[in-house]
Length: 164
Image 1 (cartoon, rainbow, N blue to C red):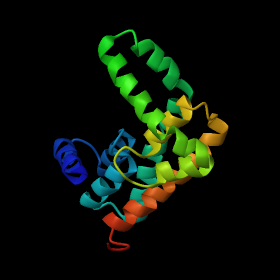
Image 2 (cartoon, rainbow, N blue to C red):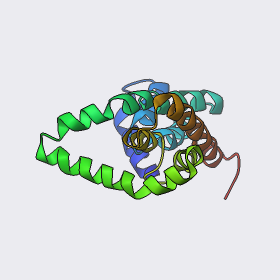
Image 3 (spheres, rainbow, N blue to C red):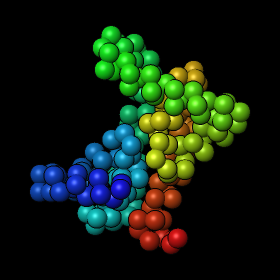
């Protein structure tokens, strides 16, 4: 399914911007993140090391902003019923995973971000860190390492470094 989404985005952007910028923007998007960026990079035939750096940077760019500002953004958006429901769902999902993350502290957040499954990743890890009041100074390096690990896993799968 992720490959399908990436392929449709690539079809839209074909010949509209440089390949590298396309991969960067896909990596910047929630849900897709480095997973989608690496798939896009492979499809766009971007060399591995270049692709990895581009996708990692794209995935990490919004993380500090999410940690620092998401509460204020949620507070503002709650004024609108539509966004209030979405925010409630996000907070419930965070609450559901709260015990796992808090039990293992840094390791819990790291594993949550590092395992490239739907609903995990840098965006969700940053949201979780913000809602659980884990300070930027502590959470950013953990999330950065988690995104790095997820990137290595996805690189291995998309660039054929290892096979399942």
